Length: 250
Length: 250
Image (tube, rainbow over all chains, first blue to last red; front, side, top):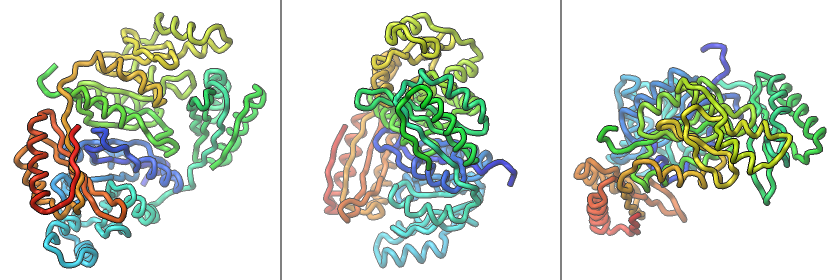
């Protein structure tokens, strides 16, 4: 471990996201959950269900970030190749994990498809299981790589148990001011506040609602006091400019 | 150009996606539009509004794929650094594009903020503008990198003009069979069809709806005839297994 704040990446393994068939929902869920335990999501990659692409991405990301979360590709069909790719990335073998075999056998009962279903008990040697309270088939962690399913309802049920065992930090503080002003009208004032607080992120996100232009101003950072003070400076210049706005801390 | 089918990557530049504040909508839109003109979206990266991360990702992706689309970071505020990062990635200078200056001046009219707004007329030297029919501020193309805004409504209005000038191919054909069966019960038959058609992608996506388990089986590829024939083989084994299903070609 080093002294940098904990960081994370998500690797989405999914042709269905790239083709446009499915709109990803997991990145937003994981990003929000990680911010809550003080881990900053710093990069996302989406790759095809293709062996070399997955292995390369896993190895690039696991060396660069404290934690890596993969989604998708751990079911029982031919296109579910995530487990084998993770094992290849770590150059280790795959086995049927005894606990996973037991869970799947108990969940499905006797069935002619049990051999196929037990493909979901295959994990790299040395991996730790991640409980699945919905449909039994576990995910797994190998070092700093955490392998989760793509189905959002199942991923969302599995993530809390996993996050509880990861080293985090203080939650990332965030304050949003939603102002009825075009962002170019306040760009200089906003830049000045950013200059005062180089350790914070001040984001400016324009929107149009009910025919009016507005800008969401988001201040984020690990230092909750600094976030609050910076948000106060933004509020002060909005008041000074007689801009109507609403403020919400999180 | 080579003889490989045209490929693409999307680079999302956006702290707001990584923090969980916003759920990305642009990847699905771009992926769908590209499939329609025969360009396969093969990778997506989401990076922070951070200079080195953006430059590295642009250079990694533009060397690997036929076309690269970036979203976000081209507004007038301090956190809009995409234009300068693209210029740095190509080692070229930035100028105020005369056409862009003219469009923005006409759109906004005289204003004390005009100097700030004209930041949105800055593009790398040699870049071609991408028209913005909604709010004037253009995107731009530099070689195979196409720079678009993050606001979905504006991106969606800009993309058709851009895509019309890119070399594509026949639309990627797709056929979906939505079957009321658990995927493990048909995994072997599905794998056999995939083996018959190595040039196609057969995806299996489990779901649960109204308390019933189902699987969406998606066959995709550039060869529309092969997609139809493979979908016929899948339909045949579903009929043979007395599985209820619905089929839709696209």
